[in-house]
Length: 300
Image (cartoon, rainbow, N blue to C red; front, side):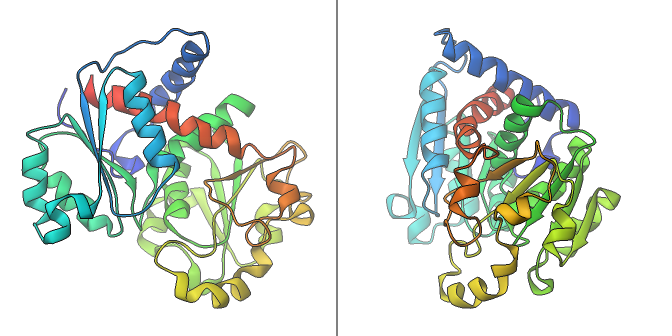
């Protein structure tokens, strides 16, 4: 198979994405049944972390172990990247030693430069622009609980950040309608919005956006690198907090998701994230299974 990267959801087509999700569900069931298939035996994944992580590191490292491969953790302090080696040179070197590279970083352009000079698949473990691996887990989770998301309505409340951008791209690829409610100064990127066409609708009023939604999603108000803006962001985003009052406007069978870590009392109240409509723990656990399916797709 020709070299493929996964920097955003749009690097794959709808059929490929749906196939990964179906394989993730099947692989999860096999693991629960004790049927461990080491399809990536002997393969090595390099993991470059410029941003801290719990779920991304553990899910990729565990996934490679279960598939029979090995994962290597690299931080800027552990590599020449931290001493100024060009991204392009690191890509050329690493891709001659490992079978796949996952990067969790800040600037999305750095991922693109790395992929342009890599001889092996590069996976976006998170950038300031997109978080496609989380969307695979989210789509798997919805499928497991409610079936296909095609034709459903998703409400995004809060910051127009990397997760919001990934939901915008998912709306077109999975054919659902996305209502985004965010303050005007924190709306998602206009170019990414245009790419989704009529699959996405912008709102400033969270009550309008969440009405009759099948899925409600939010994220932290202050992402990594924005800590200096904490108090101002809390004040601006307060009306977008997902609480029981807002959730009551969604469909009765609506699900709630959050990529975690969550700040109870800020973007979501404890009674919502710990309540019966929340599937955040399944969502977090599915990072393992969806990424295993992604690794198999890219490496087999």
